[in-house]
Length: 232
Image: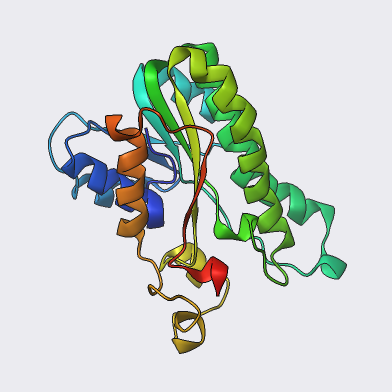
């Protein structure tokens, strides 16, 4: 199951997982864009479910339709750019609602209903901003840091079921979310990335590893996927 699959990283995760042989349940708020994703999936049996995870009723309806899954990838997210002196509580709540509360509560609901199979995998999409941070990214960095903080105890809670819980921390990736903050992929950013800026497929391939049996002994990790920018 992949959230935020209507664009960006979530879209690529759905497509690449289907190419790897997975049956994908893909969800997002924009049904038109989900239809476009559906046309790019390989294989058969995939399930498209449009839902706004910030809406309690829509989340409950989604959970009731999902059924048993072997993996969950939380890709839905929003940017949160605001210097601290201009920050209002409403904006902060809005960012945390999508980036933190929704993935955590969706996970909780799936676990309550025992919909995540033993030896399954949960992947939270955090960010290198949770580890480094930049000026004006307080709300976004805070929400992504919160995911890592909750991931550690959850990994311990679910270890007895063989369910792994990890977080991916990409650097800048060429997605609509990055474009929304008013930046462009240019030499100013690229020069800080020894291995170059990321593309959604880079993250999708890492997701496949964390979903697969290749990572059966990997849990409670926050994996940096940032092209080396963290040590520049």
